[in-house]
Amino acid sequence: MSQSITLLRSLDRRRFLMGSAGVLAAGAAFRFPTPAIAQAAPLKVGFMLPYSGTFAKLGKFIDDGFRLYVEQQGGSLGGRPIQFFQVDDESKPEAGTDNMNRLVGREKVDVVVGTVHSGVAMAMVKVARDTNTMLIIPNAGVNEATGPLCAPNIFRTSFSNWQVCEPMGKVMFDAGHRNVVSITWRYAAGQQMVGAFAEGFIKAGGKVVEELALPFPEVEFQALITRIATLKPDAVFAFFAGGGAVKFVKDYAAAGLSKSIPLYGAGFLTDGTIPAQGEAANGIKTTLHYADNLDNAANKAFLTAFKTKTGQDGDIYAVQGFDAAALMAAGLSATKGDWAARTQVVAAMQAAKFDSPRGPLSFNKANNPVQNVYLREVRNGRNELVSVAGQAVNDPARGCRAPA
Ligand code: PHB
Image (cartoon, rainbow, N blue to C red; front, side):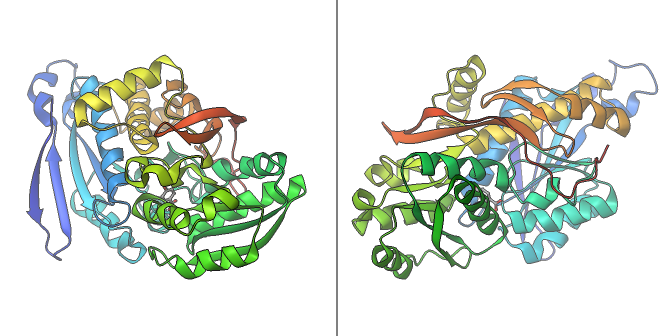
């Protein structure tokens, strides 16, 4: 079943998109005894994601992954038909509060699913806390969301910035590298990811000789690549994603550095980007909570279904969207579709354990995933599994007083 999406003009000229999958609403009304009438009404899911800009593909894949799960359940979760609302957050933190308020205040959604960018997510977390709105973060890794700002109504189906990068420190040290340069965008995710990598690398005995950064979402990498060539480190650790990652990897190879100074990174550097990066991506090693060729039944079924639905190869973003819907389904099934039974919904989501395409997935006390982190290498146009860099990695949730 494909969802229809109607483009609307928003009052303040930003793009506002709205779609509906509420096709089962009428039939479902007869499935529940009273007082379940409200439980048969469509559940309003508000996507706040980047549908434009450097992270546009990431947002679209999260959206597609979520819808795939709902479609596989026949258009409803726990008996509730799902109605979708979409806001393009453009990865602009300064618009985050307004965009969130539009979904929560104007559209009165039951849950917000978003976003990709850590800075935007910070604004969303604040509104979610102030309004007690259920929020599921399907990508942004900002540590605070499941750290000092943790709350029972805030879940994440992706990762924390710390979680996917700290294990890389030991990996690079064990590969013989001692002096490393890091490079990223200067914003929360970039800083936290290179910080976590440095934490692991220094602990192992390595040294970060220089931390290079440029403003998000700039892609003028030349001066920084020249600096890397001058410093001649043993290796480079990078975080970029989406369109920016495509350009960085190509520029790095074009400057002739890939052979002499091996490039490593957070897995976002090469996830969903390899077709556009081409040969330049070959041999890049990254850590992430996913690898394309994970040999488990859930991953194989997911990749086949995603390809059938979209014509494209699934990636971590699609998986995170898919799992966001699965997590909601856990809460809704436990209450027979009663999303308003918040305590039980939250308890069921916190206790959820499932076989995600990424491998075993459960949640810690801060509602952040506990999951394997894999070392991958780009080979044959894919992020292929090399080894498990960290088994059931649990973010320390620094600053979180148990939200439940
Ligand atoms: C983030 O801003 O948290 C972020 C953005 C893109 C990614 C990963 C993390 O691929």
